Amino acid sequence: MPRILLVEDDPSIVKNLSLLLRSEGFSVVQAGSYGEAAALAGSAFDLALVDISLPDGSGFAVCTQIKQAQEVPVVFLTASGDEASVVTGLNMGADDYIAKPFRPRELIARIKAALRKNGRSPAAFSLGSLHVDTASGIVLKNGKEVFLSALEYRLLLLFVSNPQIILTRDRLLDELWDAAGGFVESNTLTVYIKRLREKIEDDPSNPQIILTVRGIGYRLGGSHVSQ
Image (cartoon, rainbow, N blue to C red; front, side):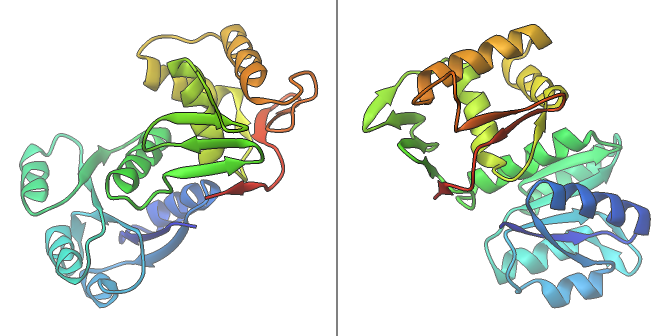
């Protein structure tokens, strides 16, 4: 389970972000000031989510402390439109930034991208006879390559990246919109799920990998994902 250091002094933001991150399978350790964050700079975590404005210092100084202690990605939370802060943060070694207010899905996507870029996200998954190598983009079933379309592959990655979470239809549509750069209708999503099952399931009429949660969405079957 990836561990996130959340450096933020606003209690309401901390509460909401912690709930969001934990719902996505992350664990969270929180620091409400520069002093607390500096004390945790060398502790074990996989990514730091840092607010630039802190009561006793700046997020820039936190970034410097973290980067000196270990090589983990740092994502800044910035005030909307504060271009100067963005440039300063990136020049100091930050891996990404996101402006407040932000969409939860966008934040999670940025965090996962930073983890992948820094090699802190698993590069391979096995689901029974199915093997997914995200570094090469190759999917194997019983040792033979399975050829997926870009959207089918994106769907599969969403499921293997969220093994303990029910993915609602709305979330899947939102994620596919971001990936495809165009609108994906609800009925079209059903077709893509069907096609993906036909390629990766032993028996598509009785799926074991991608399960339907009626009235809500879909989830990954069982607890058989290994890395």
